[in-house]
Length: 450
Ligand code: ASP
Ligand code: MG
Image (cartoon, rainbow, N blue to C red; front, side):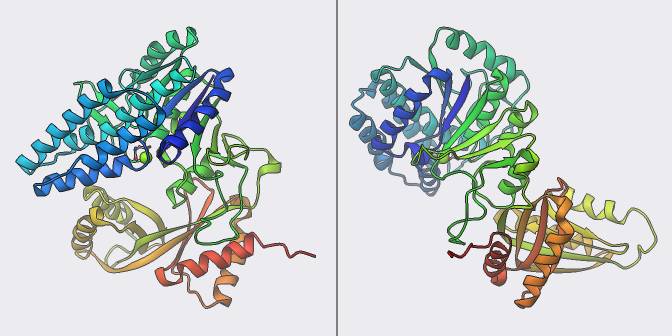
């Protein structure tokens, strides 16, 4: 058995869906469970509609005609299935515009329409093409979450729930088609697993059913040494470990939802990233353990922008314990998460993500820190992360430093990540792109043609 998940970009129009249907046909021998995201960018469309509704006016026609047009081009008659959903959505957005209120719970309800529509349009098409497919909304497939709307956490009972729901179907040689991203809490309210959460759905189902492999079909050939839009000589990476993959995802590679591979990791199931636009390409394989031969000094380099650097120097705490604990307690209380840390006896430097959500938190943290320390805050930094085998870190650091210094790029802070596969280098935002390019050239030199 395998799980095969197809993201929005693989389902953006009828032509792509037909292509995906061909892929699924070839996977039938593997007894797949299929997970679908919303079509194309429909989750973004839904969120845009909700913000318009919040301002008092919204127009559903584009969203509706997009879905109807895809169904029409696929030649399936699903009006009875999708019209009630459009009507619900219309009512829901009407409520938002009337009340001028959009709670996290309502947001999940709104977002859920994307995935629900997608399986209702595509499953009948698969059936028409001779695949014995049956659709499941996330909750029908046994997935249950807590009530942390927008970023709901999956409850352990889901594992048994998934088996109970899907095993009988698989036993009858039927192919289950499950909505990614959405689920319900115990009270029956619709929840979502966070943006990009369909990967998590796939990994969860894979773990529950102990499948042979979880395939995540995207629009890229898998993991690359860096972002090809930033460095054109970026290369494909065939095999990475779970730890490397999580660091990559967290520090800026837009390949996988960082938390999404956790269930697969815990149960030791390989995750393969494949390109639905280039299906003959082997993709990238993520494994718990990788052989020595696949261990490369440097696997990949990522860049994370919008980072704020905070330097905290203790004024009174020299020789006293509890300084770090006190500092981190303040960050915790204001729910501001720290990415990188470097410490000495009397000071600590750390980085935080700068975004609209964290701005207020950072300000409150600083207010408290200045009461007992000297604090400097510098925005507009970037973290360049070198994903590597930490056994070689001395050599890698030496190389990175000499390259950056030769090119006049000051390093503002460095740190080795906790999972031991990541060296983080903080530079100013204006130097970030050049630092990335230089380090990529250093660790992945372009071989000159003879
Ligand atoms: N449709 C959701 C999103 O766009 C979930 C997913 O695609 O994984 O975030
Ligand atoms: Mg999506």
